[in-house]
Image (cartoon, rainbow, N blue to C red; front, side, top):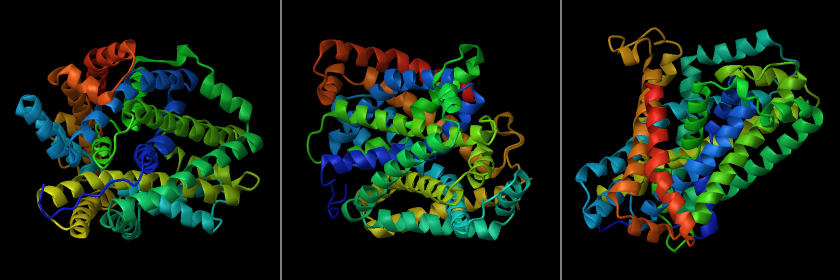
Length: 455
């Protein structure tokens, strides 16, 4: 770490928990979870998702928090120092590099998709969804994708706001914004879920989400539930390692891990309870795929009582969730630049953001100008993929699963178990045995299955 760097810390345990849950709660909960649950039979998928969060997700959060709070530095330096201290192989340092590079690359397309939430929020404020039909909803979405200039503008505005907040630092930037946005997000989500259940078809949505029909499950659905559970809690994304390093006082790692897991899970379930009653009331099917949020839902919202206000609140919620996650995705690389390269905070945020913006243009153009450009068509793994889908596949299907797998193996096998148990501070012996068994065996096997399934 550069001698000129004065490292900041969270002002309290509460603000740390708000920030780390804000990092976990994002488009994966509000956009991806509802449509994947819809495509895979609902209740049985949801039950498996909950089991995987409990059995695998939370123990891995504990492991990553234990590593992140150890050295008080960015992921690269943290893993390097632990490797040196515990005399492990130096190849484990790839965990640190993956933890700053994977979220950096992910932000290049995440920012573009998040910009859509900003666009739909603006459309909601203009009451554009009132009385909307399927054809009109398709026209709105297609017009957005067909306009590279407007998509670049949204990408720029959204990313610019993220850069400013990250550039201001931990206390006056990320913490201040998260303390406002996270309570707003949770209140909005609860209000929307209550309203949707009162005005929509609550019985059908509860039956769909919580009545398991195991005949609807396939091997693919099981692996998708596992993948959604592991990555919705930000395991392997660098967020937990980075945000954990800004904790200045001793925290209860088990309590923090349970808080992250439960809030993240509750958010996903509330998202389902806010969306499915509206869809069922409008006689629409939940298995609408990725277009659920930006094509199907606006139709349902626009034809409900109070749909104008409901649309505004919903897309504001989507924007808040995306924004808090984006802060955590940019921060790992920025912290590395400031601490290992001595770059001033705002300059590090700006240069990192500019790289993200530049690469993000390829995502924008993949939906219009470059939609027929398939640069790696000669490779079977990337055949038929645009630049956007190549980066998405590289991050989501390769880098993140590999990094999460390495973290599980590092914590479970490479490091002395007494070192890890002392860091995690599990009081009960049976809890220690469960954590060891999960981290050593269950988590690696599950992550390896997800990884090979995604190839």
